[in-house]
Length: 90
Length: 550
Image (cartoon, rainbow over all chains, first blue to last red; front, side, top):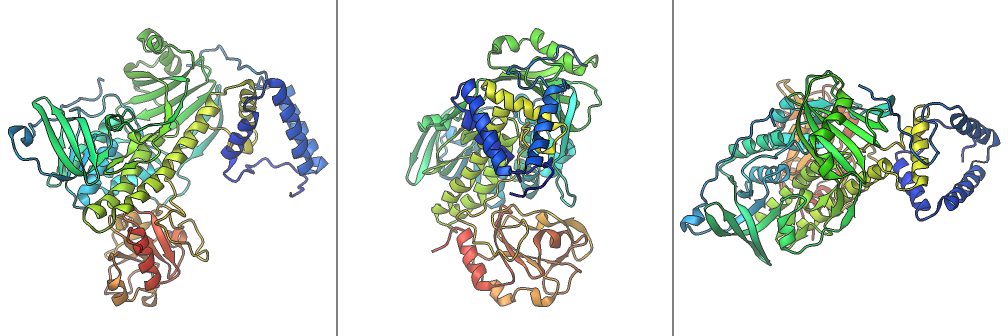
């Protein structure tokens, strides 16, 4: 693994993003929410160890937390239900 | 249906009903949809007489398939029908993806120039069928179209097929060496033969509506996740010719199809998108969809093509375009078998190659559907957070799946293709569909490389000097004899052979060389490539690709 000190913003999947996403959903198949949360925690730990670079991990943690906390539009993501904007747009 | 005037094709009493002896046909195509008609035209251009049976006497009722991809247009160009499609169709290259009312990103499906065909045109299926029927009529010495001829029975034997046909004037029987079943997703022939069609049915309901209005939406594909104008997961907008817009609304799994079809439900949904613009509803339909495929497409003398063989969700435009590639892949092979130039086992490669295409299309459209319809709280969590990250982070955009639009299937490493020479590099590996590029002939008239490939086996030779040209006597000994297409970077140098030049250097950029030799199949896929003219290696590749390998 390239222990670059800056986190990658560009696509790192080399065209295989859909393969990854399918595998991710398959890994969660049949789990309840608590089990899925546990899977996610283990996955974070495994990947963090694989990355190894603490500066990169700190940056990732900050970026992930910023979106969740800022209340930006769309940051209801993760609530488990989709909120629907009631405004009619023409 | 105000904007399109349906004309009934004439029902002509089949001579068999008047007691004429039924002559056995080499090929009967069942179904005059885009796939069946494309197949009939392709076979006719390979000098195979074709009879086409269709139970109706109209083109597609409703616009149905509307997005036709570059590869489909290249196939239709080979068949002499692309120009009228392009003239009528709405050309588009750009797609935009929105989350609520914010654009997340856009993508250009035609990132490089130097191709004759655009990434996509939108054209209603009724126009596609009308133009294909017109093209078939130009080939009337090879193609007979019989409208209101419904196949009601089939018996498939080792050496041929017998069909029972019902018409307004009575019933009769036909015999054929081969039958192409291009009779659609509900394929009556598949049912009559008792063949299974396993797959996955999706619960999600969609409303599809074609709206006539004068509006200044650009010629682009717009896709919304969680649109602000619609209480649902997604919506899609496409422009078609004649000021028709296709709107697609995701309604959720619990939507009542009967209720959602009613104008009082449909019209407010459209009004929410188009605002005050006056519009008329032309056609609408509420649908759920299946992804399914037959395990094999060739069953004795009956060959399935298009929706009868495989079904996908509409996101990605992979149904109609996949079916046209079926016809493209099948017809040169079937023509060779009918003419006794190849063994029937060549058709196994249709199963192999288009089976890969079907799997690829089903995989991609299933993934899109899964992204659009999260099945659990965890799936929704990931989906929503990908959308939240996508505006800022390019990596997350690559995970947003609003449809992976139809691309030609690569036939790399399948049975007909020869092993690659890794020294050659570049994208034109055996199995790839040959890339287009601008060329000029000896008189300086500009054209396109693909106009010189396909129909027959072709040897594409990149020869900048006479030394790189094939040895003429060795070339003449190749069997089956390929056509020669020589391209020189700097214009003609060999007065004995017609030669193209490469005015923009794009043939060189896309195919490498100089000296490189490509064996291109009748369907314009690369079968093999070589660093130079190696007659023995080319002969082996030809036998393999034409179904004549020992």
